[in-house]
Amino acid sequence: MNQLSIVLPCYNPPDDWEQHVSEAYAYIARHLKIEPELVIVNDGSSKNIDADLEQLTTKVPGLIYIALAQNKGKGAALRAGVAKATGKLVIYTDIDFPYTLDSFLAVFEALNTGNYDIAIGIKNEDYYRYSPKYRTFISKVLRKGIGFFFNMPVTDTQCGLKGFNPEGKAVFLETTIDRYLFDLEFVYQSFRKYRNLKVKAIAVRLRPNVIFRAMNLKVLASESTNFLKILLKRHKK
Image 1 (spheres, helix red, strand yellow):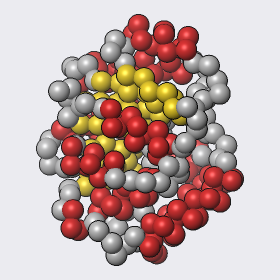
Image 2 (tube, one colour; image 1 turned 45 degrees about the vertical axis):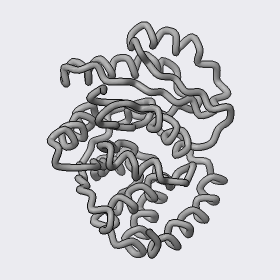
Image 3 (cartoon, one colour; image 1 turned 180 degrees about the vertical axis):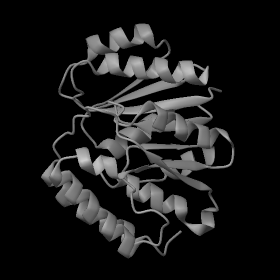
Image 4 (tube, one colour; image 1 turned 90 degrees about the vertical axis):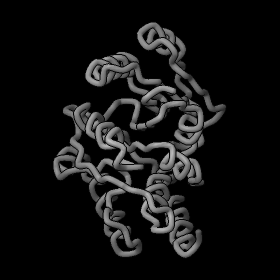
């Protein structure tokens, strides 16, 4: 069994994404002195990435590639990738590695101690200094809603850097939401007392020059329904 699987969802990735992934992978492998398993899930991209994948495969032998026939959403793509991952520990993030690699390593180290089942990244205030105003507004409104409706130690559930051991993986694979709020569903289920899981929140830093994608307003509108679904599940096991 691999010590670590890295799972990356991919939807119409930016130019030179494969170079950035290979550099990040090499950095992680060098610092951890292991060769992590890399799983990339193409979430129905309209952009042809075959040539990029071929180039990446020469630098990351054993890369696992999953192609979804149509765009289903980040949650669905990650479940497909996590289900295929064979690592003892699994960490997922975005295809552009938006958080510093030291932040990634901090998540790994927390899990590798064996003291935690799940490690979740928490964005610091620097994130809001660099993110577009509309994204900051949406994020802070959601965090206030989470703080009001959910009894959890954290309100930042949407950071795109999380990891888990087999017990945490099982909880992740139970999630049902396909798009934006799968993270909230996962974090909420992770903190439920009957699961008796140990969760570590880790402050992470945004890397310089991250390019933020525009948020799909139709998807955001539909996620209000998913928010209600999670609320209604609060008293169910």
